[in-house]
Amino acid sequence: MQKGKVSDERRKIIKTGAKTFMVAAAMTQFGGLMGTLDAAIPSSEEKADLIYINGKVYTVDDKKAWAEAFAVKNRRFIAVGTNKEMEKLRGKKTKMIDLKDHFVMPGLIDDHIHPDMGADNYLNVFIKTTDNWETIIQKIKDYRKNNPNKKWIFGSSIDWLLDDNGIIKNYNLPSNKSILDKIVDDRPVALWDQGAHAMLLNTKALEALNITEKTPNPAGGMLIKDKSGKLTGVIRETATTLVINALDNFSLADWTKKGMQPFLNELNSYGITALSDAYVVERNAQSFASLEKTGTLNLWINLYMATPLEFNREDKKKAQYDFIVNSAKYKTEQISPAGVKYLLDGAAAGKTAAMLKPFEGTDILAPLRYPKEKIETEMKKFAKMGYAMKSHAIGDRAIRILLDIYQELPKREKELAMNSIAHSVFPDPSDIARYEATNTVYEASPAIWFPTNAIPIIEADIGKERLSHAWPIKKMIENNTIVSYGSDWVVSQTPNPWPGIEGMITRQVPGGSKDAFVPDAAVDLPTALKIVTLNGAISMGISDKTGSIEKNKSADFIVLDKNPFDIDTYQIHNIKVLSTVFRGSEIYTLKR
Picture 1 (cartoon, rainbow, N blue to C red):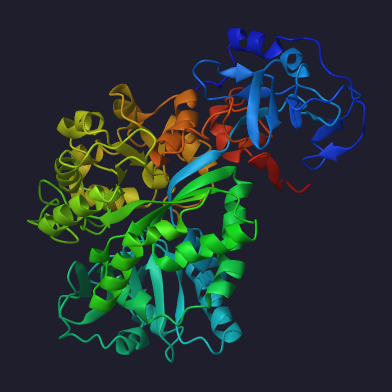
Picture 2 (picture 1 turned 90 degrees about the horizontal axis):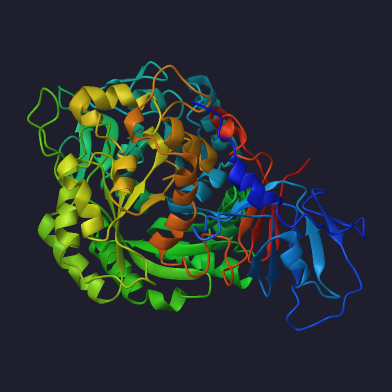
C-alpha cells in the first residue's frame, strides 16, 4: 500500500493566497495549537466571529475539495477559501485562529452506534475484547465488591459464544454457565458477547428469570441447550430482553451523568459530532433531552426507536409503540426522532443470520427474528407516519426481504433521513443494484472489515464463497449507492472510527497484516473520508447543516495531529484528534 500523498495540484490550492496574517497576540486556543490574533479593523455586522487561517482544510465538498482558511459567524461557516479571501471578513471583534498548517476536516458521523450500551459500560462491568479471562474474573469480583446492593452483575463484551458448550477461543473455556458460577454463585450474572446478539448467564441468573429446561424459547429467541438437553447458560436474540427487563437499573439522573455524558464526551474525543442511536427506548431520549437542556449535548442525534416487535411482554410493546407515535415531543434543534429500528436476523457467527442457502453441513437457514408479515405491516404503518427504517440484516435472505419491503414504501424526501440496511454483511451479488434503485443506504460496520477472530467461525458456518461477498463497499460505491459508516459499538472493537477508516482502505488489521479480508472491496482515502462525513449526514437527513465544510453549514470540524493524505496508510489508525469543534465551539482538546 502506497503512502497517501497530497497531489501537486492540491498543494497549489492549499498554498494559494500567500499573504497571511501577522500574529498580534499570544493568546492560545485548542490547548496551545492555535494562536489567537486580534487587530484594529472596523467592525461590521457582516464581519466574522472567528476566522481560521493557515490550514490544510479538506472540505469534502466536490466543488472545492481543499482550502486554507474559513470564517465562522453565528455558529455557521460563512466563507471557505484562502487566507486573503477571509481577510475581507475580519472585523474589530473577529478572533483570528492560526491552524499552523494542521489538517482540518468535517466532524465525523457514526450512523449506527449504541450510546446506551456505552453508558452501561461506564457503570457496569466493562470488558474489553483484549481482556484475558483472569482480567475478566478480577473485573467481576471488583464490581461485586464495590456494588454490594446491586442485584444483577451485568456487562460486556466477552468473546463470541458458541452452542453446545463450544470453546470460547480467547479463553479456551466452554460456552457454559459453569465458568461464571465459579466467579459468582450468589447473584445473577449476565454478560453480552461480542456480537451483542447473545449473552452468557450464570445459574443464579437463569433461576432469577425462572428459566428451566422446560421453558419454551421466546418468539425470535433461543435458550441454548447442549446435546443432553441441559441449559448451557447461553441465550440468543430476543431471549436477551428477558435480562434487560429484569435488571435493577441506575436512576435516569445517575445513568445520564455518570454513563451517557462521559461516553458522549469520549465520542467527541474521536472527532464524532453526529450519531444515529440505533436502538432507542424512551430512557435514551430522556437522557439526550436532559443533556441538551444543560447545554452539554455536543452532537446532532437521530433517534431510531426499537420496533415494538422487539419486546416479549405486551405492556412493553404498548409502551414502546406509544413512545414512537408520541416521539415528536423529543424533537429539538439537535435531536430528531427519525425512524424505527428493526432486527431481521442475528449475527454472522452463531448461525443466526438469515441466509438464502443453508449453513455449511446443515439444513439451517435461520429464522427471521419476527414474522415477515408483521415486519411489512408495521413498516408500512410507520412509514406513513413519516419515519425512516433502519434495519439490521446480516444474511443475504434478510437483506433481500428488506429490499422487497423497502421498494413498496413511500419515497423519502431529500431532507429526511433515508431508509437504510444496517451492517448488510452478505448481500447477494444480484441484489447490489437494488440499493440504489430503492434509494436505500448501505450502512457498513467495521467489525470485520479486517481479519478478526470471528472470521474462522463465520467461514466454517457459511463457507469461503459466501464469505467473499462480505461488505462489498467498493461495488456499492460504483453503483452510486450511499454508503455510510456505523461503528455498531459495542459490537465492534472500539467506538474510535480511525481503525475502521484504515480498514476500509486496506481490509487488513490496523497497522497492516499478512492477510486481507476481501481486499477487492477496499476503497481509497477520499471515499473513506466521505463515507464517515457527508454520506452519514445524507443518511441522517442532515446534509443541509453538516457533513462538509461549506458556506451556511454548521461549523462542525476537527483538527488532526497528522494529515492522512501525507502519512503511510497503515498509520491512519493512530491518528489523534487535537480539537473537535461543534457549532463553532471547541468541545474537545487533546490533553498534552
